[in-house]
Length: 234
Ligand code: OAD
Image 1 (cartoon, protein in one colour):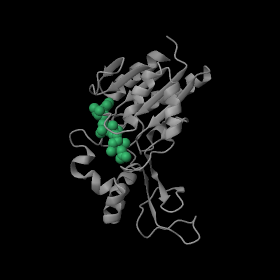
Image 2: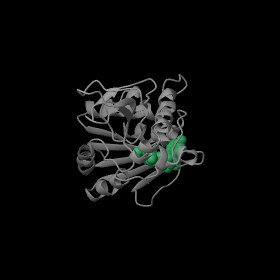
Image 3: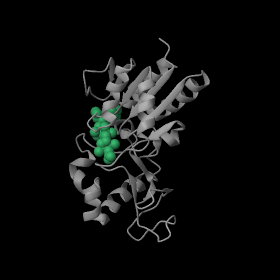
Image 4: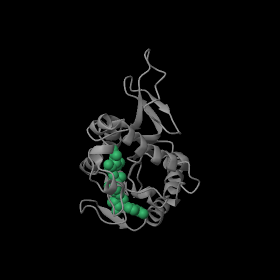
């Protein structure tokens, strides 16, 4: 079957083989960093330095030469190029805040949970590219009275970026592929159902099955199952 409108949702699992820790697996980030301390506006208010430090470490990791896009990121970039050239539509919604999809070459990316290499003005809501450490001493240049910058990460209790665009793309998809996400965090976790109700074929690519609801599932490391699946599709 030929699919015209393809939406891919990615989570931390696609970057695991690039050396970036996932959140909820064994040895995941949330094991030694309580969510309420480092991923909520309240946690930031209580202890901003802890939160700056948490994201500074993650941001610094992206500059490590060993951390680079893997074969799963690369096949998605190749697929996008080829699918668009054939007149198809493609949207890559990522929950990941690393820059590996961008570095692999995907163009149509919605980083719905923000980006590590960006700082956010807490007053104007303006994002600025940021690759070095961010601290409470850094102020924006967009406000008349400079305001403190914070990590440009969507924390629990905040609204993800481009949510309308996400739902529009998902509701129009005829193929929806969920890669390396545990499906525990809404609204992203609800996209599969929206796609299915709109008549899309739904596929899960993951190390392990997270739900029985997908029409198809292929299980194993992303560098194998994602490469196999998209190579067959091209
Ligand atoms: P999780 O850590 O919840 O889930 C990671 C998923 O990746 C699991 O289902 C694993 O089975 C799978 N996985 C691990 N290694 C893999 C591999 N090599 N190949 C394929 N799959 C693999 O991460 P997310 O679902 O991305 O949000 O988490 C969603 C959101 O929760 C994150 O964006 C983050 C977090 O709290 C915020 O911080 C706002």
